[in-house]
Length: 128
Image (cartoon, rainbow, N blue to C red; front, side):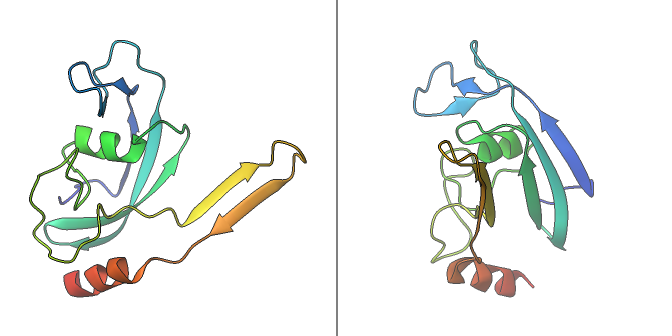
């Protein structure tokens, strides 16, 4: 969807969906704190390319939070529309560009970067 704000924060606890055990939800009884910050990188009319930074790391956090504000990820058949308007899309348009963590044994900070996969780059080019 077209996100109106240039950036924002979703602060909504996440837990198991009350009726569908395969899904997560912001309406769960035993939800845990979850915070996602998002920033618009580029607008494509009916679509918005965003960057998310997580304060917490809950299961499906970005997918659940973006769907909860009315902007499910393109291609997400669990939290968004069942039918994707783009053929040859491989799953939802979600990619972890940078992951960082402290190694449990050495206490060393490790950061790993990965470029966007071809299917994602092709979609951005098509939207452009």
